[in-house]
Image (tube, rainbow, N blue to C red; front, side):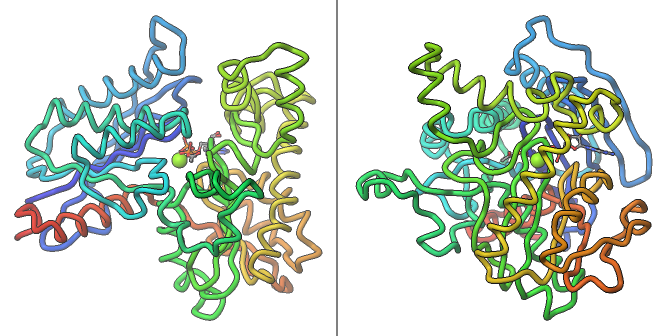
Length: 405
Ligand SMILES: Nc1ncnc2c1ncn2[C@@H]1O[C@H](COP(=O)(O)OP(=O)(O)O)[C@@H](O)[C@H]1O
Ligand SMILES: CC(=O)OP(=O)(O)O
Ligand SMILES: [Mg+2]
C-alpha cells in the first residue's frame, strides 16, 4: 500500500507520521511520533497503529548549541525510521515549511530551485526554517526517488484583509515584502476544518479565536473558518510570549540595547528568540510542564505573564472579528495545561466567557460553563494530517503516479 511520510520540525520538536493514501488518505496514521524537548531533554516517542509504542531518551550532543540539538534529533529520527520500516511503499514526503514569504502561498513541490529560494527566508525564521530545510535535504539524499512537498505555515493567513497584513512603514518597504505573514497556519487550517463539528454550524462559522499554545505560541482570529488576523507578524517572534521568545516588545528596547549596551544583531537575535520568554523570565525552563511543577516564585511569574499576554491579545483578536462566539485552545500547552486555560479565561469575563472548572481539569472537548455566552473548546491540532492532505492534493495536481491506486 502506498503511503506518505510527513515531517514537522517545530522549534522544540520534530514530529513525523506515516499516512496510507490508498484507497484515499487515511484519517489515522500507520505510525506517528515525535522527538520533543529538543534543547531541553530530548525524547523520542512513537506509536504504531497496532498499539505498540517506543520511548527513548536521547543523550545531549557533544556541542551544546540548539543547532547541534536539532541535527542530532534529525539523525536519531532517520536511523529510527530506517530500523522501523513498515511494509508500506513510500511515495512522497510532505514537510511543514514555516516561512513561504510573499512568493509561496500554497503547498508545492520542493525542487532544488524552490529550496534555494526558501533558504532566503532563514533569517526570518531562524528557529525553524533551517531545520525544516535540513529535513528536506536529508530525505532527498537518503530517498532520492521520493516526491517532496512543502506546506507553508504562512499560507493560511493570506486571506487576511490588506490592513491586517500591513505595518505602518513607508510603502516601498511594504512592497518589498516587509509585512505581517502570520504562522502556525497548518495548525489553524486543521482546526478551521473541525470548527463546525466541534462548535455547531453557526458558531463554527462565526467569530472564533484560536490560541495555538506550544513552544511557539500565537492566536488567530477567524470568521467563516478563514484567518482575519493573527498575533504573529513578519517573523514568528511577534505577538504572544513563548518558550524562549519575547513576543511583542517595544522596538525602543532594541534601539536602547544596541546604542547603550553595544548589542549587535546576532546578540539581539539570541536574546529575542532563544533567551527570553518562559525561559528568560523564570530562569528555570522553557518547558511549561517544568514551570507548572515548580514552586519557585519566578516560575509562577513566568506563567502569569504568559497568561496575561494571551488575555491582552485576545482583546485585540476579538476586535479584529467584531466579537467572539468561541475560543479554541490547541498546541502542546493549549491541549494539556488546564491551569493555563483557567488563567486565560479568568481574564475574559468581559467577553462573557466563563469556564466549567471540572470539564477543564478533565481536558473535555467543551469546557465553557453552562451560562457562558462564549463557547470554549479544546481541539487537539494535527499538523501531520494537514501536511498529508496537502501533499496528496499536490501529487494529484502534478499528475504524479504516486496517487494512482
Ligand atoms: N501535559 C502537559 N502539561 C503542560 N504543558 C505541556 C504538557 N504537554 C506538553 N506541554 C507543553 O507544550 C509545549 C510544547 O508544545 P508543542 O506544540 O509540542 O511544541 P512545538 O511548538 O515545538 O511544536 C511545551 O512547553 C510543553 O511543556
Ligand atoms: C511558528 C512556530 O513558532 O512554530 P512552533 O510552535 O512549532 O515552534
Ligand atoms: Mg508546533
